[in-house]
Image 1 (cartoon, rainbow, N blue to C red):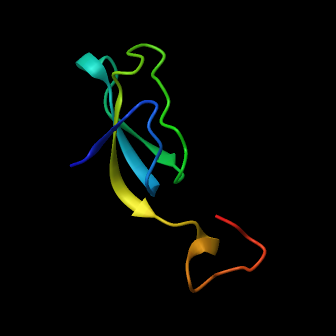
Image 2 (tube, rainbow, N blue to C red):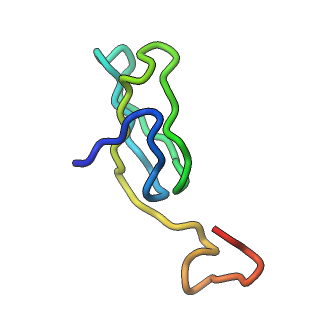
Length: 72
């Protein structure tokens, strides 16, 4: 599975599993929006990794719900 490092930009929106260096915190999940920059961890700094678990699009980016006044 592709991992993203702190400082990189998310290629897709979705639910990401977070893996911390030396497992100082148990793995957990966060929501990230496409284009967001993955942050550093306050403890393991830039050694934290993010793996997409479920990719998703914003509701108004989906073709069934497209809005002309929404830009994503």
